[in-house]
Amino acid sequence: ICTDPDHAGRGLGRALTLAGLAHLARSARTGMLYVDDGNLPARRTYRRIGFHLARVDTRYTRDPSMAPFGGLVSR
Image (cartoon, rainbow, N blue to C red; front, side):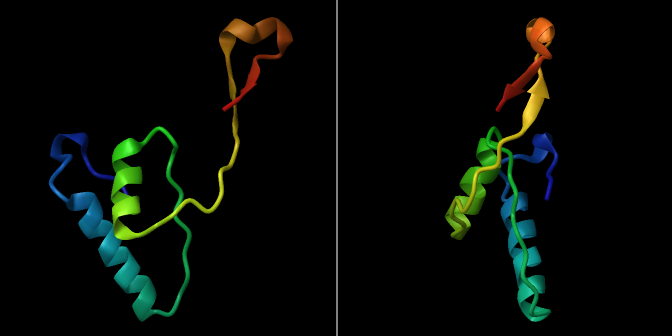
């Protein structure tokens, strides 16, 4: 789910999330929600709806300042 930052704070993300959840409930399917740790507005929206943190995944990214060591850092 993604909303244009120019329309932030208008409840669009919440409305889209609730519509998606209603669709999943009607079709008797399950789903999983992933949100980037740095996306605070989305995290607040999902928490207010009732989601909770189930798991934290670590990914790796290239840090140019670490080039002599391969440049991989954990995030």
